[in-house]
Amino acid sequence: MIRPRLVAGNWKMHTVPESASKLAAEIIQHKSEFGPVEVALFPPFTSLAAVREIVGKSKIRLGGQNMHFESEGAFTGEVSGTMLKASGCSMVILGHSERRLYFGETDQLINLKLEKALEGELIPIFCLGEKLPERQNGKTFEVLERQLAAGLGGLRFDEKQLVIAYEPVWAIGTGVNATPEQAAEAHRFLREKLSTLVGPPVAEKLRILYGGSVNAGVAGALFAEEEIDGALVGGASLKAAEFVEIVKKAK
Ligand code: PGA
Image (cartoon, rainbow, N blue to C red; front, side, top):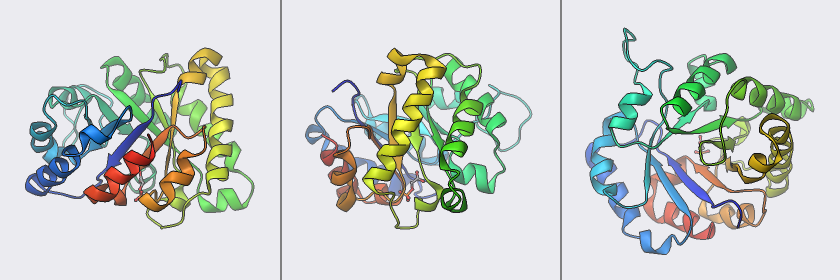
């Protein structure tokens, strides 16, 4: 496979250190069953240290759910990429629709954050996706193209330095999935646009994850699409057995 699959668990604002340790331990117990699939866990900041202890020297990656675009400074309540790195993270989720929706993150701000993550050698999972009215009005591709171009504008990276996650907003936390065909169509479109941004050889190898109500029941059908290089899992990543099942389906 030219693109090693990645299954990422976005724990959102769930778990305290004790429950995070337990969840991570239950997942890691199955690591010998993951095969070539890369696995990454994104606990809240306050549980990073606890999960780091459990993940230890295993190949499971640790990541932050957000970061600021400066390394340090007078930014009360913010966490920087430098801090994530020093806390054992190798990845960071940026541009998540919940950040865009509830915290006013714009394409321009996300671009600054992506730049900083790349500079600090944190691998961003750059999220984008259309809202329901945009899909209904036939604007999906227009939105994806805008988010992709604005988010990645002026940045240089290769396939090892960045991951994209296509997350249609209408599918996040709603129990409604994009069909495998809808997801694959969006992924193909994104890859084509990436080709003009970073050149075909890198675009061909960049991983595009699908996210939005992924669970063990639908994972198999999604991963049957060769365009889908893994998943960014929210709700189902909080249940160890189900998350492990999703990872196994990605093999
Ligand atoms: P969900 O979340 O799996 O709960 O829909 C996905 C995400 O927000 O990354």
